[in-house]
Length: 490
Ligand code: BG6
Image: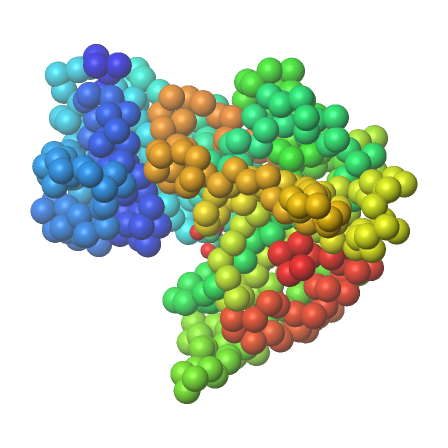
């Protein structure tokens, strides 16, 4: 570890993601002593800037996760001393060659260095960068890896074109397709929860589970990202990737081992077993403005970067089915929306009724409300709880539906690492378990492309919902059609 050098290049270094997530994650890794001794970081973008100006730019977004970190300022300075900036065009072999010679200077006197490129750039320049970077700046004797950010296309066709193009310059084992939801603590814990406990796995099937809900909501709108967002919409932005990845991990069979290939083989099988998403099983919505207490929260169409008559959905709910022996007939409800009443991401597993429940008639127990529900709260306030029925202590017989609660904050002291920290570290270590393989995405697009096309070709109007509300009523009808009540709205 001490003998190897690592050069990390953040392409698109002046962008939002780099500033908000990538540099803070790299700093956290440095602070936690997780980076090799000889590492250097290079920001690469088109704008002209010196090293000092670049350091000032990123310094403002670095924070110390550990509150008692008295040496944080000193560590930040040390970290910034290892950061450099190189201006260059995205499709220029010559500019990447200039970057490469700068990296070589930084890597000396060690002869061998690994090189990691983080492509934090729009998809239309992915392949140009991959081409120039791999041709002019890849490592001569160590490894070269590239982390690529979504969107990986906007339908099956564009995905395949992008993927073919990437393969012209990189091998699959060099491409790290990132889905940052896979780096979240509770998502990584899913496999532990299922396969390291006896009590859940036997119940994990159509026999005991009535439905599964994967819910994502944000209490803010597209704010400044309307231009990007409008080309994709919420289904492509969140459901087809983040929520579907969660579904795959949730529903997969036990892999042969914890190796990346074994896990990803199982995820692909789940996605392949999924039925095509049908138009009648999708509800779309778009937030409109709302005035409360004299102030107005802007609607989606009030965003200057959004075309005036856009029908791009900012909310969508859909019911999908995994037609295999384990899940046949169980609705998986996926729901995602912006500008809703709260920010939350969670998985809700609703179990079936207790057959012949002795307490049903005696106490007038509302069976729907009293069924067990397992909630995996991805964020905020991470935790897991199980709704159980319990006798209220005392002489009488009263039943309370309450929680067996594992809220992380009250159980663990450690601050949770950001998803980007974990994923960048995994990439450095060559651990591909939490990165998406090409065939996973190919199948994911196959399942969603027809319905996305139908929505667009038919010009389906999204149901309007006020900013800060609980979303369109249509989502309730969709759930009810499948005999489900949304757990987050119960
Ligand atoms: C991104 C989406 O992938 O995830 C954004 O493009 C969304 O629209 C974001 O806001 C949510 O991530 P997180 O980690 O803040 O829940």
